[in-house]
Structure formats: structure tokens, C-alpha cells
Amino acid sequence: MDVILKIIATTGFANMTLGNLVMMGIGGVAIFLAIVKKYEPLLLLPIGFGVIIGNIPYTSGLPLGVYDEGSVFSMIYKGVTSGLFPPLIFLGIGSLTDFSSLISSPKSVLLGAAAQIGIFGTYLGALLLGFTNAEAASIGIIGGADGPTSIFLSSQLAPQLLGPIAIAAYSYMALVPVIQPPLMKLLTNDKERKIRMKPPRTVSKREKILFPIVVAVLASLIAPGAMSLVGMLMLGNLLKESGVTERLAKSAGSALLDVCTILLSFAVGLSTKADVFLTTKSLGIFALGLLSFMVATVGGLLFAKLMNLFLKQKINPLIGAAGVSAVPDSARVVQHFALHYDKDNHLLMHAMAPNVAGVIGSAVAAGVFIAIFQ
Image 1 (tube, rainbow, N blue to C red):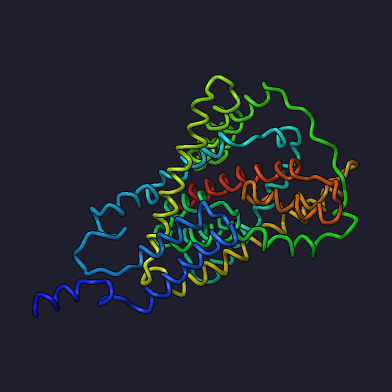
Image 2 (cartoon, helix red, strand yellow):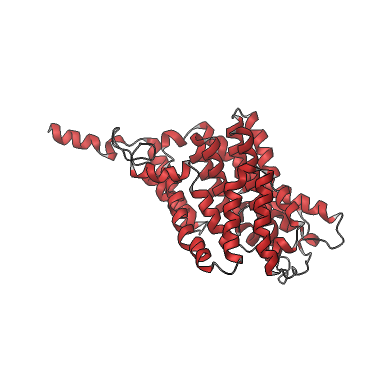
């Protein structure tokens, strides 16, 4: 009987807490959104499953969880906490991204930069709520709607908040089609939404090859802390555009990107143990993250309207909303929203310019924070 009681005491049923059940429910919601609603399924599904597995209780002394030295899950999690996975993901993203729209419209860099106001505004808000400089910087980067950058920065500055920050960042990335359209409708009028833009000019192969080299050098000189992210992003793009490393570009954008996405997303989910995640700080992070994302969207929209005051050839202010880093989701949202008002007004390629500029901008912002606070 003693043996039987000891066996029962070691089961997850005997050690289950209300917090574990709540977190497992949250994981189930993430899986539901991924499968049924198709919100960022490549991210939310492994994260949701990780949340469920990470909150199955076990007796102390068993090296099973991400916080138990020597466990299999802790080894995977080191790829997150060390900052390894995010740059590798950026390598894959770079190999899949076409920067032609940004090269053909350099002024779009301003829209990507304007959207970063959400990052620095939320940083100040987090300070007012009592977070440290490093924590506030890590929370603010959520406004870039860039999951890998958020994870990379928090792993360097605030590893104790990595789980909530990562979940918040990926959640708001998934909710781009829900959050952005109301703001776009509120801040633009019918005439502005119907503005048609000239097709982007044709970009030469030489420009495509020089762009990643120049951007990597300039961004790293301006913010050395951004070297890991921007450098890998541009390396991936150079592999794609050079025309002589197609096999490497294909591997980076498929197998490597998929493996790193699975491991990073699952490990982030595993890290959300109830006693770590269910805190007042986590609630504050989610609230500030939403504010940051909304301010970033508003910043891009309003700056596009400001630019139109000085431009002879007007731009559609909707593309300003794509200044956040959710590539290509935010650009697609702009495209679909514009088509509701003009079925022949295709803004996707125009919106991709500030969209990819936002990726670079958020990485540079992260580099600035690392240089200041690390």
C-alpha cells in the first residue's frame, strides 16, 4: 500500500494546481485559434502545445522542465535564452524576403521608423508602472510586432520575463487582422483609402545585391547591438539575391527556418509555468504590449498623413499601418482593407516597403536598448 501511495503521489494528478489548469486552458485556446481561426498557426500551435506540456506538474527532483538543469527541455530552451534561435530565424526570413519595394521607395523607411514610436512610448509607460529600464525596454519592443526580436531582446535584458513577453508578442502578431483595421478606419477617411499609388519601379539586380550589404554595415555601425539580427537577416537576403547560392537560400528559408520556429515556439510555451506566468507583472506586460502595438500602428498611419502634406505624388496613408514588423501579415491586412473601398486598388507591394523597413527598424531599436542597458 505504501508503494501504491508513493506512485500516486508522483503523478501529475496529485500535484495539479488551479494555476496549472488555467495555463493548460490558455494553451488550448492558442491551439484553437491556430487550427480553427488560422491565426499564425505556425507559431500559436507549437506555443499552445508547449504551454500544455510545460504545465503538467511533476514532483520536485525530476529533471523534466525548462528550468531544470540537464533536462532535454532545458537544452532546447537554451537556444532561446542564449539568443541563438532568433538570429537563425532572421536568416530564414531574409532568404524569403524581397526588398525591391523598399529599394524602389526609400521614403518608406520613414514610415517604418515612425511605427517604432510604439516601442519607445511603451518603454516610458513601463517605467511609470515600476518596471526596470531593462524590463521596460524588453516590453516596449513588443510594439514592433516582431516575435524573434522580442525574444532576442528579453533574453539579453530580462530573461525572467521572457515567457510573458514572447507570448504577448506572438499573440499580437496573430491578432494583426483584428487590431489594425479599426485603427485604420478611425484615422483615415474614404478619400484617403482610395488613393492609388504608381507601381514601384523596377529594381536592378545590382541594387538588390548591394542593399543587404549596405544595410548590414550601416545598421551595425549605428546600433552595434543589432548586428546579430540585422546581419543574419541581410545574409539571408544576400544568399537569395546573389543568384549563386540558391541551395543555401532554399535551405535557410525552408528546413532551417522551420526547425528553429518549431523549437523556439515550443520552448517558449514550455517556459510558461503557472507560478512564473500567472503574476501581476504578466498582466501588465500584456496590457503594455497591446498599447505598444496600437501606438505603433497609429504612429505609422499619422506619419503617412503628415508626409502627404509635403508630397506631390500622394501615398495611401493605409500603408503606414504596415510599418510594424509583422511580415507579411500587416501588409496583407492593408491590402484587404483597401480592397473593401476600391476593388482595383492593390496596395500589397507598396505596403511591403514600410513592412520590411519596420523589421529593420525594430531590430535597430533592440540594438539601441542592448547597447544602453546591457
